[in-house]
Image 1 (cartoon, rainbow, N blue to C red):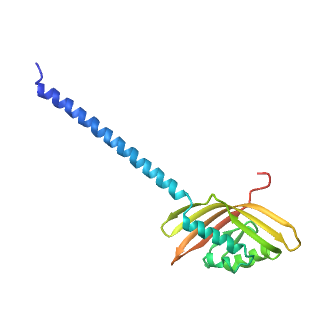
Image 2 (cartoon, rainbow, N blue to C red; image 1 turned 30 degrees about the vertical axis):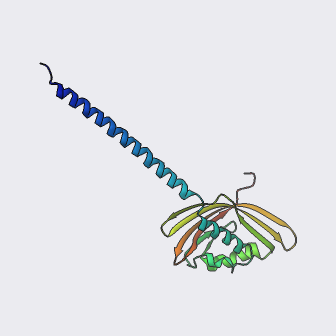
Image 3 (cartoon, rainbow, N blue to C red; image 1 turned 30 degrees about the horizontal axis):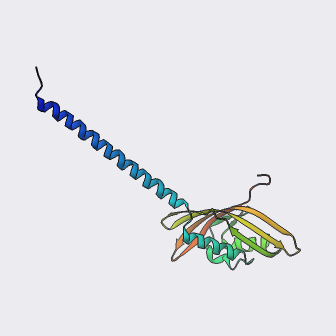
Length: 176
């Protein structure tokens, strides 16, 4: 029994349309994937607003006085800040005098500088930053102390301002 010619050409046309639709779907998938990857890479790079914020934060700490950087910190008592020494502080009311005693009292000059590799990720009113920093202190007795630091800051937008609600500052162990 012979098949009608129209039936064979209909199947061939359906296959061609199916292949075309498959190619279009694959091309759209590649375009979408490219957009998603580019967006993810963009979010990991330095946000200009946070570049300025981090540079201003470092300048405030470089004054050697905790009054200057206080404006960058949420003042809630239940917040925890990890620093190089001691292990942690609970709330700004503990952090400010603790850092002053541990790092600033013996300093004649302080310089904190953020590295170029600032990464910022934002999710609504929460953002986190990671950046290497360099700390340089000239003590009152003339010694110079330098350290490379790792900084992670968790920021929350409160009103018009981004405030640190948690941070972790650490120094690599010697020899690393």
